[in-house]
Image (cartoon, rainbow, N blue to C red; front, side, top):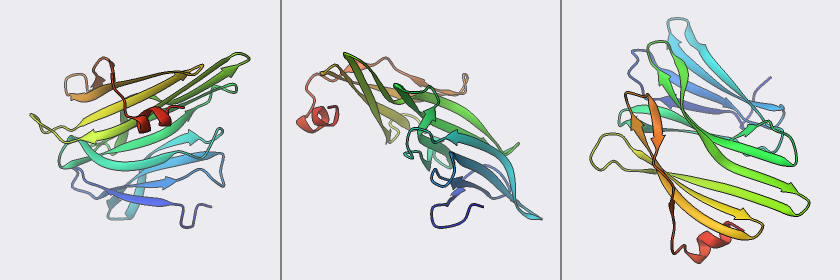
Length: 192
């Protein structure tokens, strides 16, 4: 059922003795998108875990792999995962999943808002966040920086925070938001 150029295949760097990969079936011909974790073994590639995402509001879901927690192990980053809330409120999240190489299963370590759009008569809210991977400075883990723009009835605010890996909590933990005092014109324009 799922064939064509739209399907994405990404190999995963892991601590597993077996090869790992993800297969992404994007939004489009289905009302959902699927993310499959595959493990290579004697019988070929086998699905060991999967996650489904809804595609009701748009087809903006995208998936990438990158080393976030450790330099030699990939994590799975999912952008614009729809939370099914219904109109006139739309919410999409940014998720980060680890791949447990022992059990070959996904584990979520970050779930945060990436886009919120709400409107009702006189009220209009639009929140958008961009996420960047920053290189490590003092540790081997990378940092995810979030720049969030909030447009509430034409009043714009821009703030930033960072997510760092906390091994004992087994989560990417955020710092508090800090207001961007002098945003560039391009940054302000993207919030409108």
